[in-house]
Every structure is written in C-alpha cells, then in structure tokens.
Length: 162
Image (tube, rainbow, N blue to C red; front, side, top):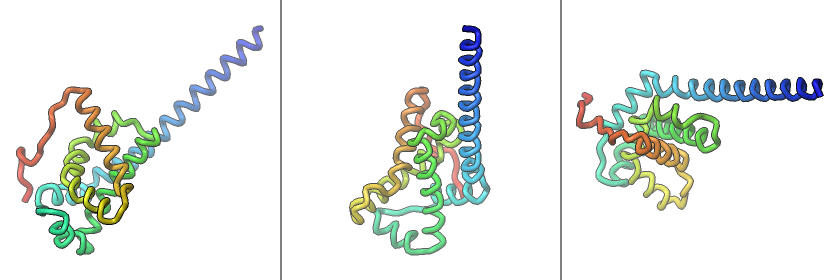
C-alpha cells in the first residue's frame, strides 16, 4: 500500500511538472510573437495603417494599397501575425487572457478597420478561410473585453499620428 501511494504521488508530481513545462513552452511561444508585435517596425506600420490609410471601399483599398508591394507587404505581415495568434488561441496553445492583456487595443482596431475588405475578399475569391483565425482572435478578445466590463477603446479620438 505504501509503495502504491508513493508511486501515485510520483505520478502526480510528474504530471504537474509536465503541465508546468507545457505552460512554460506556451509562454515562450507567445513571447516570441509578442516581441514581433512590440517591435518598433510592427508598431510603426500598425500606426500608419490605422491612422493614415484611408479607403472608401474594397476597390479603393486594392488600388491604393494592395497593388503596391511595400503597402501590401506591410498589411499582410500585420494581418498574418494576428492570424497566427488567433491560430494559437484556437488550438489552445496560448492563454487568450494574456493576449488580451498585452495586445487587445491594436488587434481590435486593426480587425475593425479591415472587416469590409476581408469580407469582400472572401466573397470575391470564394475563400471564407482568409484571416479566419484573425477574426477568431478578434471575437475572443471582444468577449474578454465584455466579460471584464471594459469600454470600447477608440485611439483615433485620443491622438493623431503624423
């Protein structure tokens, strides 16, 4: 009986150590992405898109930004990064509460700015999967914002970037 108790206790300790190892690895994965999101270049590009890019509709967006390599690359990099974070959340590899605490305002504003373009792109190219995990990330973060009772943040009214 004593040996069985010791064996069970050792199994519990091993399981706890494995869980802690998984949590540590998940944090390492997210921190790697967080370093990208917090880089000066990523922040500058995000601010430029959010505060200086303007378009009337999808065709206007495509003519101004999508058909130009620098602008297209800038937008795609940001959108794909957030899509990747959404994939990690969907697969339960990172804690959505942590993502909310560290990134939510930019994520929400970026998705809201691109909703019409993404929806039209999905329709035009029969590609409903385009940025589906970015949309998932957005929905999860909105849910957390509502659960916490935080107001919708609108950085555009708080400052202008020149």
